[in-house]
Amino acid sequence: MSVTARSNPVVRLVPRATGSVIEPVTYTVQEVAKLLGISLGSTYALVRDGTIPATRLGGRWLIPRARFHAWLDGINEPAATGTDHGRRR
Image (cartoon, rainbow, N blue to C red):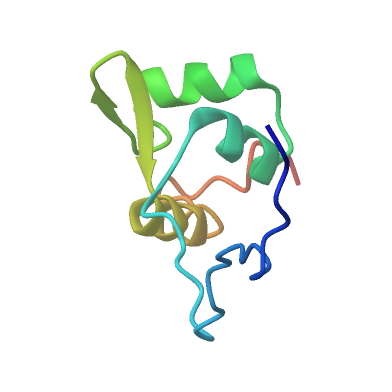
């Protein structure tokens, strides 16, 4: 048996850059923990109690990207209770 050299080089297919980036529609709990800079355990607790908007799909929690960012934008608004974050004056 002899080894024959190929006359044509092997071409590897690489996806072309189309200029548009496809971003995920959901985040995982781990991704949200990293984005918020808090521990994974704290993030799971906030997801379970409904503080962070999430949906359970099978055995996984998924955080819808748009709802998460809307929630995050809304947490800086003053509380309706009239308290100044527990500070006394």
